[in-house]
Every structure is written in structure tokens, then in C-alpha cells.
Amino acid sequence: MSGNVSTPGASVVSRVLAVLYAFDNGHRRLGVTDLARRADLPVPTVHRLLRELVAGEALTRDAEGRYAIGRRLWDVGMLAPEQTELQQVASPFLSDIHAATRATVHLAVRDGREVLYLDRLSGRASVPVVSRAGSRLPLHATGVGKVLLAHAPAELRDDYLAAELRRPTVHTIIHPERLRRQLAAVRREGYATTEDEMTLGACSIAVPILRRASADGVPEVAAALGIVVPTLKRERTRLLAALQVAARGIGRSLP
Amino acid sequence: MSGNVSTPGASVVSRVLAVLYAFDNGHRRLGVTDLARRADLPVPTVHRLLRELVAGEALTRDAEGRYAIGRRLWDVGMLAPEQTELQQVASPFLSDIHAATRATVHLAVRDGREVLYLDRLSGRASVPVVSRAGSRLPLHATGVGKVLLAHAPAELRDDYLAAELRRPTVHTIIHPERLRRQLAAVRREGYATTEDEMTLGACSIAVPILRRASADGVPEVAAALGIVVPTLKRERTRLLAALQVAARGIGRSLP
Image (cartoon, rainbow over all chains, first blue to last red):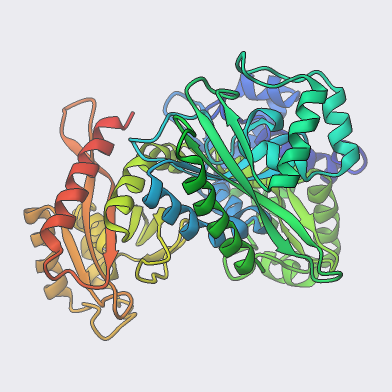
């Protein structure tokens, strides 16, 4: 990023971000050496930045000397309008769907070539899923992902289908033409499904959430709403109806 | 914070944090001048920091030139272990309580003199509440807050009761002795209630979530679990039972 060049101040900003971005789901607590390696910075530099970041309550330091993201950055993250405004509008609808079905309910957006989960509602009776709020999965292996890929710009879809596709299970559809036909069907029929394609024993059904574009009035796909169940047999119609009603409600409530 | 002194690098870190902390729930999108004023920094300095923070995808800049927290800081915030690990463990239990009651369900911790909401589940049929994940409310005016205040260190409780107490509604209990007696009852009976004390037309009931301390085995209050309903009449026993079962389940699942 441009933060790596020019003035000292600028490079300090980029170093601060490199330290923050060194944390991920698999690395929520890191020691100085790991942080320096993952941030690609000298240990003394990281030491000085960590002291400042802990003093500023952006990071915490535990008894074993490991650092983690602190409450004030959690607060700051919750203020991201793109993610949290949509999540807050959709939240009561997700609760209603979950209360009616007890299934896992997902709210997701496209983040480049991945599906980013903004929210997940899951009870103890729900089928286990790998996704959770903040996690990312391949677009082609999930119901919400297929919806978002089907409505992505054509060039992006072509690039996506041209690339090597991950195969989380033997049922994941990775043949480009078969996937392309399926995505066309998703646009035509207004919903996507998966069967054991991301996780064995988990099926999903998902619909787009449309936001009416202010200018020409052509609605744009703002997000995808999906549900994960052990099987779609017999359930499909009922679940689809619940999702469509909620998606319309969320779309109407979007700013 | 110490970031305001010593080396140039250090002070850049503190300036970066001052810019990030300039955003809050009421100010999710800010222009340069507002940011400079709220961060107490010169406009040119803020300009340079903003350029770097946008380049690093920490902030976004919209068409009107207003800045907001970006997706990568949202990602980073989701990694705060203190907040998200508890939230993730509790999430399925919250979903189950909501599915069973359709009421608003809260997961909260004490943050100094306030209750901090880590999660909230609320359907469209639920009674409207002011709280949402990330928001803070007075300890003495909410069910979860009373639980957390009742189990806070005695000195903190004394200081809290000695200070002037906010009164969101005419029903908020602000008389120190009356509140002290009520907190003693919360510890004795194992749950707290409110009636129109935070919001008119909203009653709440809440219980502590206990984490067994590794060392001496004395359980500590890790959080509070609460539910908001229009009225507690006739419901109290059923809701309390649901909360206690869930709180025990969460407590057992805590690391």
C-alpha cells in the first residue's frame, strides 16, 4: 500500500496497519516475534509500536506477553457503516427466520472473490457450519456465495470461472460450464442452493437482497440471505418463502 | 495516552488512534474538519493521516468526501478475543432463547461504570430497545447492568452509588440505599429485574454467567445474560428458567 513509501509519518501509519493486519482468525493472540514476522517489520520497531498501541488501548497484552486486539478497536470496527448498517437493518429479520426454522441463517456480501459473512444466527439444534460473522468462504461453494457470484459483474464472473476453483468437498461444483449454467439458473429462478458442497451434511438455500438504486431505479444486489439445513427435501418451498419475505423486508428497510 | 509524548513515531501512533477514536455511533461518517476538531489535530496532519489510512483500507472515503471506518478495521475488530470469543460461545444459546421466547436477548459485560452490550438478538415482534451490540448503558438502569453491578468489586459499587446517577425514566431507581438493597437481593436471589427503568414499556430479567476460576475454583461473573419483554407478569418463572439453563450452558462452554 502507498503507506509503505514517502514521509516518516506515512510509513509509521503503514507500519501500524501492518501490525494490526498481522492478526487473523487463526492468530488472535501473538507474541512480538510472530507479530514482527507476520507484519514483516524489525522486532524493535514492532516493540515500540506495540507499547504505543497498548497505551492507546488499541491492543491488549496478556500475562504470557501475547498481544491481542483490544476493546477500543472492537468498538471502532463496529462503526464500519458498510458492514454494520446492513447487519443492523437485517438483524431482526434474521432472528425471525431463525425463530421460525431453528436453522442457521446467514447474511453475506461479496468481498472480491470470496463471500464475507456479516452475520450468522445459529442455535444448538442447527446443523454445524464453518462460517461465522467475519469469516470468508469461496463464492462457488456456498448458497449465499452463488447468489452473489451470479449477480456479480460479468467480467468478474468470467475471471472467477477461468481460475482454479477450490473443492471443499467432493460435491463442490468446480466444472466452469456446469457452474456457469447453474449461475444463470440462479439469476432466472431468483435463488441458489447447495447440497454438501461446502460441508458434508449441510445443504443451503439463498436469495438476493435487492436495494433500489436511487438514480435509474434498477435494483442492485446489496447482499445475500441464506439458510443452512441438513436437507432441502420437502423443506425447499417453505424455506424459500421465508427467505423471500425477509429479503424483501430488508431491502425495503435499506437506506 | 503515552502516545502523545516521546519519539515522532510514537506520536504518529497516538495521532492515528485519535483519528480512529474520533468516530462514534453518532458520528460514523465525518469530513476532514470535523475529524480534525474531534481528534484535536491540525487539519493538514489529519489530511496526511487520512490519505494513508484510506490507502491502507482502514478507512473509506465516500463521494461527498466523508470518511468512515473501512472493512479491514471491521475485520480487525472482530478479532478482539475478550469480546468475540464470549460472544461466539454464547451465540447459539442466545438464538435458542430468542427462538423460544421471541423476546430481545442480551449478552453484556461491565465496562467501567457502564454495561457494554456484546450481542443482541431481537425479532420484529420483540419490544423495542435502545441497546445494540457495541452500545453502552448505565449499569443501574438495566437488568444485565444490575447483575454486573451487584457482582462488581465492593469499592466500585460504593463509588458508583456515591456518584450522581442518570435517570433515563421516572422509574429508574437512583436512591443509593434502595439500589444497594436491590443489588444485595440480586446476589441473594441470583437474578435482576427492571420495570420501565431504562425504557418505558420495557421490562427485563437477567442472570449472571459464571466462569469457574481455574485456581481456587471460585466462580467469577464473566458476563450477564438478559431478556427484555413488555411485561414480567406471569412470564417471570418461565423466562428465568430459560435464562438460567442458557447461562449454565454458556458458563460450561467458556474457555
